[in-house]
Image 1 (cartoon, rainbow, N blue to C red):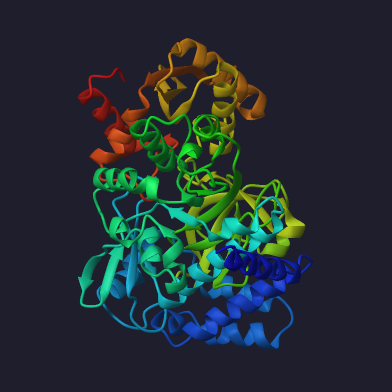
Image 2 (cartoon, rainbow, N blue to C red):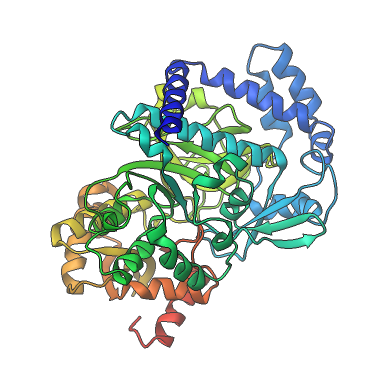
Length: 519
């Protein structure tokens, strides 16, 4: 059995060696956009926005005229705009709207936003793009010398949404993007894939969890991937059911964890209490709109953007000139190509993809940690920053403050969220901390506030002036998952929002009151 592992690792190492590091990223992106324009120029969208003219500039003019025309001709879209004007027609079955042909799959994605489910098109080209990038991620494991050859014979435990998709009409379906991808895994990967198709069809998270726990002893897991919170819950259930000390008692070969969806750092301490030894952690940036980036080498500070697989990127400086106080993009914002960005600056992402997204604001913010390698880190969401009075508090700041607080107090904080509220004529932050350890709210308040003052210069200034107070409410970690369940968002790619605003805050407070918890 190790023969296949040796062959696979050999192929992976060969693939890794021939990958080029020093390449012209702007030229790669130019070619990527050209391919997208060429494919979609005769669609309704392409004809309206003069794709033929932009394509000619990209092919025959070596200057950046093509990008200037692209910015001039094609408007920036948020979800509401592009769905209302274009994607809704594709969902109704119309052909050649934003991409050639009829769209077979739509990914349901509400993420951590206030809106009801969004319908993101997943074309055949995008399904292929997901598969290709997933293979590249597997190939990148060849850079990790500590991975033994026989590990490639072990199973991959992938936790996501149900592959039992909902039919829109005959031959077209909608569901979680992880379920769509699992439904379309290559046939040769079937033997390695766990929990397998039968369990993956289960839509009810509680029943799926029970089936996974039942089958867990029969699996030899070497790799696992998914949202950290759900994998942590699964491991806790398995350890409890079989009276184990750690998950390695039942999965001794577990070595690699590919995490995504949220920052892993706040989960790390609690996660590692379930392990007998550290894992190799690989960061992944996979969204319903595309597989955007992944960590492709050991000890990297960020994830490498996938620049040549059906996605063209634009970067909008995340500042007051381009976004209002609610995190909404202004008309005609400043946008940059990859060769125009700077390291350490927060940018909102615009995507143009082989699923028919065009200059689409995905809602995430990133920063380049290594421009030479095109490596980024996700810093938050455009609408998940807190800046009531100029404190400019990012999700990255929040994650780090929680990580440091949990480490200092030797507690596990499984989830958290924060809301900006009025405090008399000034402002306050109200933190909700999910932990099953005993800790006084005032201690958490002091630690979190203290760390944020070190991490964020704007925060410390505003704490002396307009940001009057910091409040902390401690709730059992299960409260967060109960809230998600009440909203029909258990498992899959669903996650707890780090910032609560408007209707989302009202919904959260209402849930706490129903549970008899103090708001």
